[in-house]
Length: 248
Image (cartoon, rainbow, N blue to C red):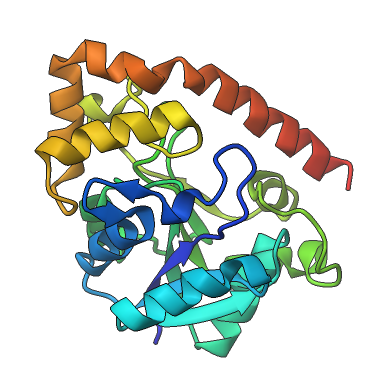
């Protein structure tokens, strides 16, 4: 496969343990991620870890879905991606984070052929958290290889410092005004995020368009407040992780 959707997920999460297997309405978080990924009409790969904690996740996905599964390093996410790319002959991957249950599959689908000569296409900083992360090429991973390949225990969860240090050719999404933060948060990292997603699951099907979710939350600001206060905590945590990555 030359292009694929790469779902990066593991069971051993710190703030919301085993969040990938949490129930959201009638579905588990991993179910929603895979169902939405399939809407892009590309091969879907679950890139998880070799840890025993992910044995159940792999067995569950293998039994329920016809997708590829790759198991690699735990903390060294970049090394896991790189080895997955090589193993499956991937040249370009649409990276979907396990946190981003209601990611915008239409954005990924529309942009997958527009990366051009760039190594990576990323979401702008002012975009609603959880809608989009990256489209990454093997060329970009090759440029970063010297920074992450040797040490399997390297914590490369935060890929931003590695991209900057390797001076990747980069492009950013141009987003609609409705997709600017607007006091909305659509990622799964805290119990409040889970509470919001369970509320959304009462009204929307798992594969509903992300824009419908955003419009609904803009009209129902009280609902959006359930978890948006966590955005500051999340950003602070992200910054701390980036600092730790820089001193490794």
